[in-house]
Figure (tube, one colour):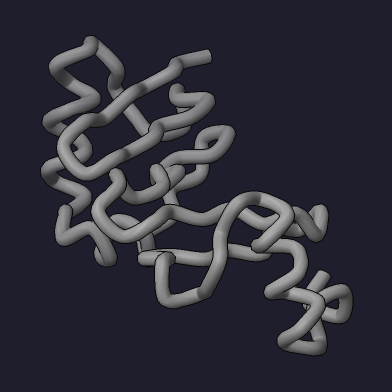
Length: 102
């Protein structure tokens, strides 16, 4: 993945092909496992965070968005979901939580 972008010029070339003229325009830049690039420009909504993936909670991301397990359990309860293991995917984007149960 990262090997594909070892040189700054290769990364900048890939960004230019997506209409980004400089890294300074970006709020967030992620090199995905596939080698593709995901980004958000300054002033745009941030990328969503996958809090639960196939029943497994990502505690680090939960902390990163300043939420607690108690908060998440309350949100699950509002949707009649008893536990994290019953969730295929839970996605957070700044103010919204989307929950996709099994």
